[in-house]
Image 1 (cartoon, rainbow, N blue to C red):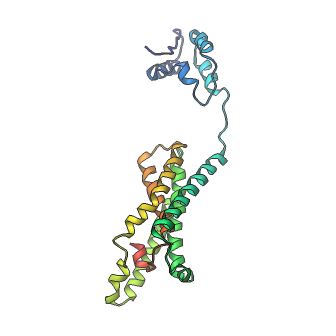
Image 2 (cartoon, rainbow, N blue to C red; image 1 turned 180 degrees about the horizontal axis):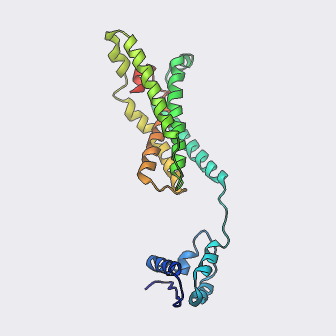
Length: 242
């Protein structure tokens, strides 16, 4: 039997009946509702209202003491999650993988910043997509197209470098010296970032769960690649593009 039956007279309309059926099917009681975002009164007060519960009364209860959503809270949640996840990934890289000894020289090369901009751009845009997916009813807009454009530009750059190189060096440009371990090390560094993004999503309201999870994984991998770049010796665009 529902914990909070709604009694209606014969003049109640279809909306009243739908609300009553909805609450009865959910078996929502006053004790359960008192833990929600609204403060709807004590159990005794709600039980006293049962015989007179109609659409107007229910609407008043649901609308009482509403707290407006603060956009800055969502921004702080993203900043905190990504900052903590990034710091953990940075500590794992520095403590286990170690920083590339040639990093001081590589930062003076354009190829290093092409790699960083590529991974960082994918990370930023994928987080923007994730922010849309974290809220119900939000359209993705052109953010996915921006991700595809960055990937396409890197593929074009990789193809140009690959075709302009001699046949004997093309395999090395594609595979480098770390192709066998690179994906696993990136996944290792991306794990704390993925956990942070999942924590962010848990505080929001995503409705497309599979797409949101896949986007969180893509964003974590992209941001993890930015951290991994401090260890990775590969700078060839064909390697980065693949």
